Length: 289
Image (cartoon, rainbow, N blue to C red):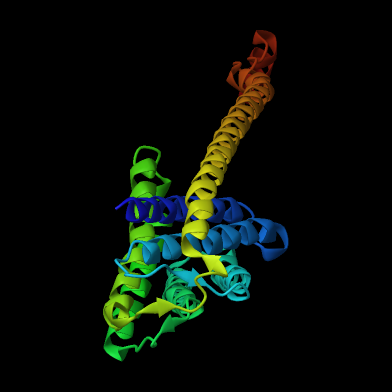
């Protein structure tokens, strides 16, 4: 239960940080300007979802110690970050619903492939057999969950000041739990209980890897969440300052316009001077003559 709890916390925190960096990237929706934000988001997704997968595998009731091949551990970690970067780069530049659906499909596919890589890196014996219907159900769950979570993240409700925290939390919960649910569906279609040992249990023991990931990742993720919160507060402060400056400039422009139009309106409102009486009498006499 502890491993399941840590896996769920890591997955939800990872999803929340990724969504925060996607919002940062959308402030400047060009790859030339927001490539750093998309790379940070990919690194967070690759590290956090790998942590959730490893912790969930350690939560399985296996009658033998689990381990991973030393060569495959860094390759899976780096490969997941590279695989997560294209959909995040797309979502950072385009956030209309076709791009959101395409990004969700890509994220779901990588999410399903990630447990496959870690299970193969464990070197289970006599060997794991996969059922295609379980893989299809896991892929559908991952794609649907990622698409719905991204649609919630980029919806109009997510940009409303009162509903933003609740919508963001719901999207992060959905994205994080989608990772664990798709992994369980995938593993339900295997003969995992029939395995009798792990070939690479002494190269990278699962207990050591879970200890490092289960402690370090939540601590680092807490700092990243704090950093995102401080960034949002600073951005809101700058937005309020810009709004006050614009309102001040608009009021000064209206005042200057009123000062210019007021004398002209006063001259237009003055009565026209009447003709002198003798001139009018002379003109009437000349008319009679």
